[in-house]
Figure 1 (cartoon, rainbow, N blue to C red):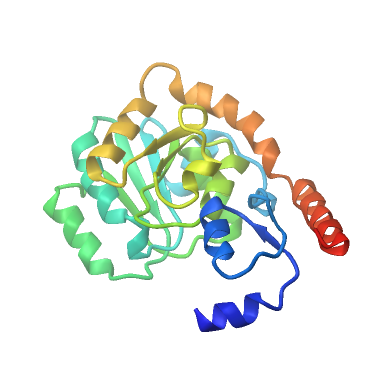
Figure 2 (figure 1 turned 45 degrees about the horizontal axis):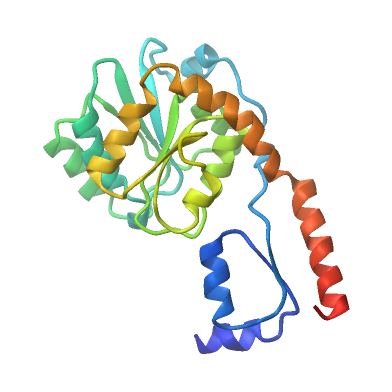
Length: 241
């Protein structure tokens, strides 16, 4: 806190990416601050055909895939997702866990074994190169972010880039970026909550509707919009407002 106060007191204006961060910021400074969510990660390219993505990842295209993506840290709730998957489990559905472990790998492997999920969880526990990101998101039906704590998440913006529907937990700023019932479902950070949200994803035409809605929602996350907000912030600072 002393270092935050020392540093932040020297700043004239702020761009924040979630209301949770804004609330934390207000404890230290009354300087002008504007909201601008993280832009899309356009550097990962465009989506590819699902069959091609499955072929590149050596996945069976006849299966349906949910995706947990990114560096694996305990706060990201992979343990919650594994418990949720044990409740959800359906024939023909698989969970891809793609990312490098920054937490104990053994505890998650043991959990997979104890839940008898060895046939259903596909573990790609290595750093995914930028060139391969598009294959994971092109193969997946849904991205699941079962976080226990969060401010906001860059992985959400990758999902928007590829128009992949999302399940996110009701923590931090995740729900601000993923409108519930429009591009995904927001649920409690519990196995029951996550399992229920995944199940709802596969009801009727939900996945298709959410993909179509992603095309509209992602327009909020342009680099041009962020540049405009930064320019606006400079105007506020210059005017002393």
